[in-house]
Image (cartoon, rainbow, N blue to C red; front, top):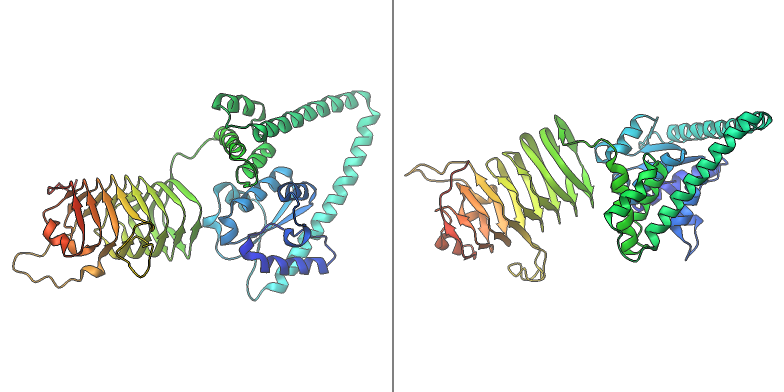
Length: 437
């Protein structure tokens, strides 16, 4: 069974049901002993398993270990029977999502446990019968091949080639782990050349790259090799999501690269310890009730996105364009080291903008008109560090508290006196009303 640690209780209940029906189930929490090489044991079990029951949940969709197990299982030709718990399709990596569409999957629900148990047992019975027939047919085919000299010789040649290929693969993996330092890129390219399309080596390399028991050099080597093997595939230049309807999403320790959320709605999204590189949130998208914690925004930005109730906690923004025109109830804040002194961020976790542009295309109230709007209902920056940031348009000083501005370009509304009222600090900054575009 492949599952995330967060789903251990569900995995145990499925295992108990299968054991009661006579199946021999490997569950790592009860089948391994202390001190055992768990990576070798897991790969050995995956090599010999007739089927892999994979619990597809938000936790496993974000687990690099679970993904490595799924890739490894598919590469080894094991029958993968996924049990999907909740709407996790959007959280799955693209290769896993494509594989899921090609195979039948089961869906766990609160009121369908008996049906799920019956369907799962039926599928595993079919796998067991199929494997037994395949073993008999393989034995018969081998007997026929041996009886014919020409066919036998051809088999010997193919067998020799396969053995040589496996030995080469084993030698490549041994080289990855034995190197005391990361290998040169040219050697990685030469190493990968004979294994174009070798899903086994790719699965092994992906598993090695996330194995904390290996040395840093070995993991870097495995990461470079897997990148080289994946690089032969035709990449998707940019992922554009249209009319997306994403609710209760979770991205944990993941990454989005070259992605544009063009239109649709994203509601109750939680993003943690993730990198968003060149990710754009479009003006036809509605983003609501979302939290971003310890997220790195590298390039990209929010392009007039309809956003309400967003919380950016200890996030870093580099080279981002943030259009606040349609933002409401959005908070950007640092995490202080001492909760009793929220204005002191030293040794805490910063929320910071660097080499970025912050824009608001809204209009200030006309002269003589009383402004009854509440700044706190728009945007709040608390303890944020701004470095080399350009502020453009109608930027209100009430949005900022305990922030610092270093080498920034500030509009006339953000003068030193107005910012000082919020205990903000300015250094080496200039005032200029830059054009919006």
